[in-house]
Length: 308
Length: 187
Image 1 (cartoon, chains in turn orange, cyan):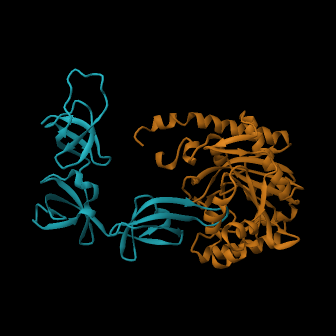
Image 2 (spheres, chains in turn blue, red; image 1 turned 90 degrees about the vertical axis):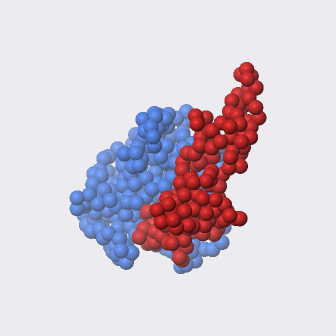
Image 3 (cartoon, helix red, strand yellow; image 1 turned 90 degrees about the horizontal axis):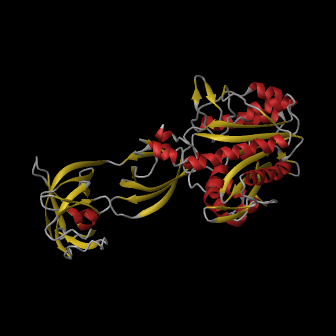
């Protein structure tokens, strides 16, 4: 990068869209009675997810998501909350990944993942209209109709259709992630957003299992133009089961030679007070990519680590 | 030793005893899943390419590659001969190994020779090189209307597009990375 200042100036239009997207998000949630909260970025104990690594910070860690703290607020009776905040994940860098990125996370008590699917649809459409873009947008030459309901397809159905095997087979042979990334994602329709739902139980450490089929968890992901935008659960509220899953995840981390995190004990203690809830985490940078037609996440943030 | 997180475009690694260069690289991480590092690799000995996906647990040997300054001497059949001016040691590269660099090879030119272990496998010419024009359409003086570039042939046989005022006998500077004309230079 020979001229960093010119490079920064060239991003101005995208950064204006970014500011408007965040403003649209705030208006959307304010209109629905959500309280905006700010929980600490630096925390003692992130959720021990097997494949999400936290950046250490003087004995504690930078949050990989605000999930643990926000759920403690739910346990305290906050009901509906949202937050737009920086999150940090070690060694994640690619055209859709930055080690420091911006996450929107929101939770609603009394809701389940089906309610949140509808709320995701409403939010993205609201933001599009807030930007003056309407229900149909163009993403890098691909027209996309954002109006809901979006296409819904179960993970197992998607695997059978696009990966040529069941999700269970993929898990058994260890190809689940490769299949999702290289067979399923590229095959999803691009002219409308798609919701993949009902993930295998092992793929959702903090989600409630489906009552009618406990082999899957009430988890969904939104894809727009093949880009993963949001992840959501009907939240697990059983402290004993949550502890068991965390212990299992921790073992998996240890086996893989990864940093061991202490269990988030206060969270586990308070979880029994958390009402039935559902929550969504949405990548704000990627949402901005969608509305700017950016090919890379680099184009929607002022600074990437390489030019700092 | 490299980790998967070190993988990036142009990194050179060794797999099954052969040196590979990563010509295309994509970091993918689905949902809560593991990081996947999809690489297009080119075998630096055979030129063949293939795609391979690595995971964060994978580690890699750096390719045992070294560059050495040597002087280009001459072409002998389909072999190009280079010499270490300090030791007078000579090495040979095939036309294939020399690749596009042959467009810029003039006698006594100092180039970088790439070695895999002790074996020479390629060469990189200097970034800029001055070459004499041996063939070009004459410049019609006073014809200021024409700004179109025209083809010219240089002393190495390389054909390049040049501005209308460049004539036979002129020396011009070429950017060897793009192969493009840069400027006319004084002798």
